[in-house]
Image 1 (cartoon, rainbow, N blue to C red):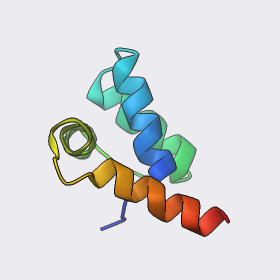
Image 2 (image 1 turned 180 degrees about the vertical axis):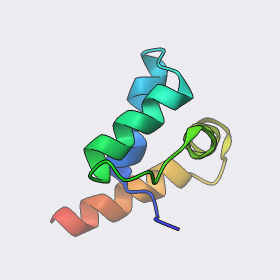
Image 3 (image 1 turned 135 degrees about the vertical axis):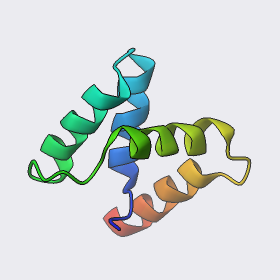
Length: 72
């Protein structure tokens, strides 16, 4: 399993808001973040969307905090 990065989750969220299908999002994420390898699929994109919009424990925010700590 390849863990999600904040930048990856942010891209999924943005593309979802723009109305792209889960399949299209997965294909683009694989190109942009995984050198074209088939890492993400429609189901995993749905997972991120659910975690981003339904999770009360701040999954998305924790990814952002981790990313910010790494780039400092």
